[in-house]
Structure formats: structure tokens, C-alpha cells
Length: 426
Ligand code: PLP
Image (tube, rainbow, N blue to C red; front, side, top):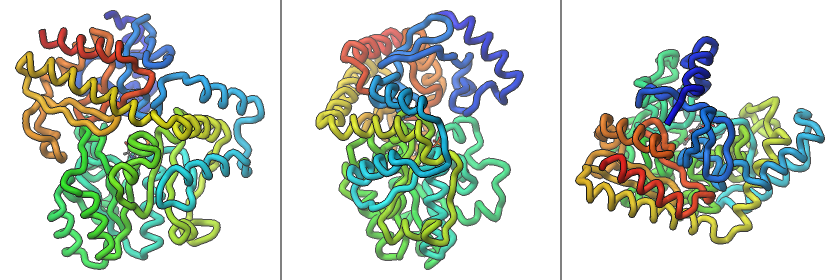
């Protein structure tokens, strides 16, 4: 494939944008080469500036669950834009999407919209601290909850890909209130709670981790966290920025039948526009300004274009009774096909999958936490990434990311992807 124009555009971007990208995970630093500049996208395909067509397994890092430029979403945005793009005053559509989200997600009465997943998680933790009157939080190594200071402690995603899981600029004062636990290790969480009795406001977790590859909760880990939280007056915060409206209508809470106290959303809920949200029951949400003392605000929060895209997206997902089964079936098909190729070619690997999230790790150890995720062979991953790209398949340029399956992918696309994998290791 030729990336002449992408290379030229990247060289220009590097002059005026740090690293040439507005979010580090877009850079190819971990795999080498030049980031691909997208011209447009439709359905399952990206069309780049050099005229290449790529089957997309990133889908804007999750939001485009129905594929790119999905007509009902695009039309809703265009129609809204004609009537004004921001007012800083209440609009009816904010209540409409809030009603729909509350009806789809278990255990929530109210939801507040913000502009990103980072804002959602940051605000959720502030609310948890304000509600409980306690300062400390527990997060898990390799989980990513956005780039707010409290979370950049052994963070996953780009933070680990680029070697800054603990970012300079986060003060020691902030870092000391974030306690770090091991994913899927309940004994470790128990010990942390014991050592910090009465000081922990919340445990925040990706109920299926997606920022160190895809890692499912094992051995009723979420249920065990729920029990520990109940026993110790700690709020359980599910960061469902990736899993919300993706794994099921009601997200990971529904899939695993576990109740969280505060939920964080992003990605799918905005239909591809900049949206995040956090939600809880009345008792907790009524602590939020202007009803309660915990402050949180946003000039563009509940923006009409973003709400129109989100409402159109959630409406589609709510009305399509088969969507989540269909997505899971496609992902299972891909899993089986890739497994077969890698086994036949004698490539050491592990594949993890939950619903429409899947990741390929080049190590045979079961990948259950950050430590096991970090064991994967990065040289093989680099070769795999570039090989897939040369065969027209775009996966994340990092071994620490999940793939996101969209409903726009056909079985023909999945077959092409499996054939690409075979070609890479031929
Ligand atoms: N939480 C999770 C689980 C995420 O995966 C992400 C982003 O990838 C975030 C929070 C932050 O969301 P945003 O990038 O919209 O700020």
C-alpha cells in the first residue's frame, strides 16, 4: 500500500501539533511508520488520503458500533445543525436522551451529560468523594479512565503504550489518594481496603477491561467487588465508557447481573460526537449542583448536535432486539477464524473476547491483568499490525487496545480479515 499523502500530511501536522496527533493513541510510535490520514468513512470501511480502503476494527475507538456515517445518526445531526449549534440553555432533546438512557440502563434514576469519557469518570469520582465524604479511590493497574490526574496512575491505553502510565504533572498529593489494585485479584483489593479502613470513597473499574487488550472479569470478580463495597461503605463505579450500550442494552451491569452505584459512559452514547455521561440513583445524583453541593458544569454539555447523534444511536440500539447477539456472533466467528489460522501457523497466542470486544495477544499465558497483558511479544504484534494493514485491515496500533466490532462488518469482511491474518503469517 502507498502512504505518500498520509506521510506528507503527517510531516505538516508535526510542525504544529505535538507528535502530529491530537490524541497519542493515534500515533504509530509503538509500531513504527506513519499514521494514516482518513479522508472519509462509510459502514465498515475507512478511505484514506492515498486512496486505500481499510476494513476498520477501531471504529473511532468504540463509538461507531453501527459503522461509519450511519444514516439515521448523520441525518439527525444535519437536521439539528440547521437550527443552531449551541445555546447554553436547556433543550427538550436533553430530556429525551436522558429518559431513553435511564430506561435502557439498570439501577439509575438520573444521568448528567458531559463532553467526554474523561469528564464522566472525573466527575463520577468527585461525586463519590462528595457523597461519601472520603478521599481515597481504588483503581486497577492497566485500566484507563481518561486523562484526569487521579487516573494517570499505572494507566492503560496510550499512557502505557507510550511509557507514561504514571504521568509527570500529576502531583504526589493527588497520586497518594489513588490506590492501585490488581485486576481480577480480589485478595489484593481486600488487603487495600483493610489497610485504608474508612478512607475509601469508591472503587472504579472497567467491568470488562479494554485498555490493556480485552480482559474479562474472572471468577465473579465484579460480584465479589460488589460484596466488598457493601461491607465497607464504598461506592462501586463502573466505567462503562467502552462497555456501555455495547455489550448489552444495559451494558456490563446487565451482562454480568451486577449492580454498580455510579456509571460512566462515553463513546457509543454520543453516536460519534463528543459526549460522555455519568449516572446513578436519585440519592447520589441529587448531591450534584445545582441540587447539591458537588460542583460540575460545562459550556457545551448537552450540546444539541451531540444529543441528536446520541439519541439517534441509542434509539437504533434500543429498537433492534437482535443487535447485541448479532455483534457477539460476528465477533465469535472472527475469533474462531483467527484462532484457526494462528494454531495452523504455530503462532503462540491468546485471544480474549467479550461480546463485540476482542484482542489478540502474542503469548500463551492467559491474559487476566496488566502483568499478563504486558507479556505479549511486541515484535510479533508490530509485524502483525503492519501485515494486516498491508492487507487492508486496520487494527489499533498498540497491543494494549481492544478491537471494536461494528454491525456494518459483513461475514465477507470477517473472512477477508481472517485471510489477511493467514497471509501475514504465511
Ligand atoms: N474510560 C474508558 C474505559 C475509556 O476507554 C476511555 C477512552 O478510551 C475513557 C474513559 C476516556 O474517554 P475520552 O477519551 O472520551 O475522554
